[in-house]
Every structure is written in structure tokens, then in C-alpha cells.
Image (cartoon, rainbow, N blue to C red; front, side, top):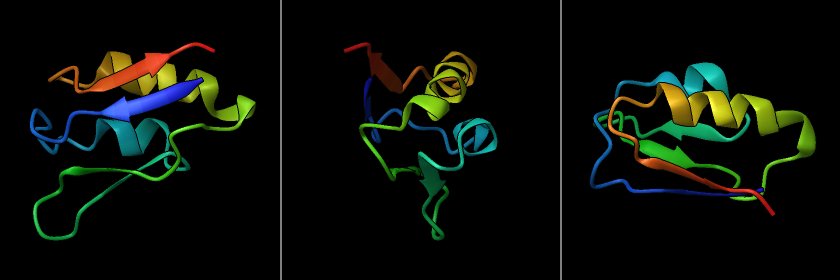
Length: 65
């Protein structure tokens, strides 16, 4: 799996961090997403998929490899 985020589209809702805290974080100053790991471990794949679905602006892109 390869993950990318479009920070320009992020609305800082924090759903990604709730679903996959090993992969996503938020900037302190404005809450915009920070991608911690663009190639998450297999045990995080399901959580990353859920985070992408839950993202209100669809700024998380998941490529299955």
C-alpha cells in the first residue's frame, strides 16, 4: 500500500488520526494532516482504508501495491 495526501484539500477534521494514528497526525498550528508513513505496515492497511473513506474532503489517496 502507498498513501498520499493532498494537504491543500484537507479540512483538518482529524478523522484520519482517529482511524489510523500510526499513519496520520495533525499540525499543531492548524490541524492539517501530516502523513507519518506513506507505506504503512500491513496491520495498518484496514485502518488507512477506513480513514480514506471517512475523510470529508477525500484528500487521502490509497494505492494498493
